[in-house]
Structure formats: structure tokens, C-alpha cells
Image (cartoon, rainbow, N blue to C red; front, side, top):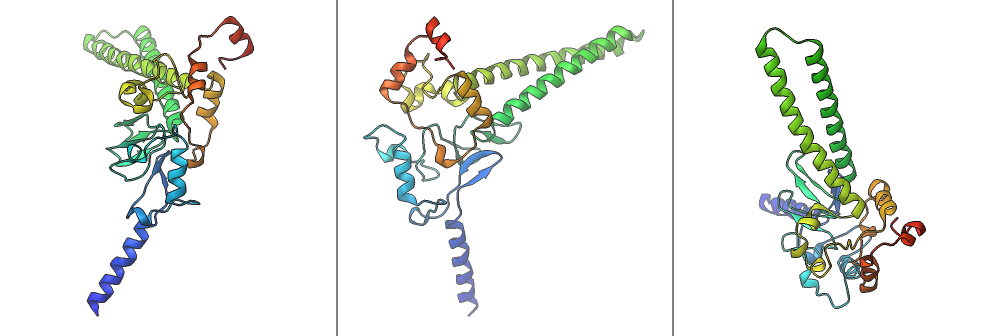
Length: 249
């Protein structure tokens, strides 16, 4: 009787795990699926409709085998990547931040940019206070001034690093890219044949900023790959008329 109760308890546990919905962790939308493929459940949908939804994001004739994550056993939409540190697939994967201990993706990239901005402003403000203090109170004890100068040099190095990081992520926002797409462009199958100066997912500077700052994270707003005609339009260089008509925005 006791063995039967333990088996029933284990069965209930496995059933609960196999029916966990897609969840969000630390701001990034993360597809969390456990259990066998036949038991996978996505809110408001099922396995067949999710597979069809993902296939619609790719060009016709794309094999579903090339889209399936070998770790999560789930079909990945464009711009998604499996993070080995978090052991989850993340939409619009940018990178895994070791300082924050989480992935930077679609749901928290904007907050990550503001975090870098605040850290840069804090370093700049602290550096100004250090310089003001050194000018106003030059101590006769040389080792106190040496410590202040050493701290100021360390702070300057951190400020340069933060400024470069802030400029880099600002560039990614304006061109609607991610760090992973920029660094691994030649290794991503759907980006290999696209010239480096062409930003396939860019919608113009203004729209990119709006989507980055105000767009809500949802599995139903996945980005499809651009068609050949759209890529040809994006590869056309800007002219003065394009700037006047707002094509770049």
C-alpha cells in the first residue's frame, strides 16, 4: 500500500512538471518546457500551432530539424538562442551577463542599457568629486594624496570601459541588433548571406527606439525573417531625399 502511494505521488509530480507553461525569468522571455514532447503545453496554443508559428517566421522550405534546440527540444524562432549558463532558450538573446547573473534579452535589454547609463553617470560624478577634493584639500601627507590619485586612475579606467559599453549598446539599439548577432554573424545560418552593412531587422531609427523602449515582450510578437525584396530595399544606400522623406526613421 505504501509503494502504491509513492507511485501515485511521483505520477502527480511528473504530470505537474510536464504542464508548466512558458515563463519569464529576470525580464527576458524564456521558453521553459519540461516533460516529453507529446505533453508539452504552451498557453493558448499547442505543439502543432507553435511549430507552425515558428515555421511562418522562416522562408518556405526551411526544415524543422534545423530550428529545434537540441537542449530544450523546442523549436526556436528567429533571434532566439539557448543560453548554456541559464539552460534556457532566450528571445533576442544578446549575451549572458556574469555581473548580473542572468541573460540579457528581449525583456530586459532596455533596463540593462539604463543600468549602464546610471553606472556611467555615477562614475563621472564620483570622479568630479575626487578632483574637486584634491584641488581644495591638498594634504601635506603625501601618501593620502597618492591613495586619492590611485583611486582616481582606477575610476577613470572604469569610466572609459562603461562609456565604450554604453556607446556600443546604443549602436546596437539604433541598428536593432544584438551582441550575439553582431559577433557571430557568419555562424548564424539566416545571417550568413546578408552583407555586413545591412541590418535585416532594422525598422528605422525612430521605430527601433520605440520598439526597444516601449514594446511589450510576448511570444505572439515574434519577428520573422525579412524577404529578399525587403533586404534589397534595406541594402540601398540612403540619399538626401531619403533623409527628407524620413526613410532612415
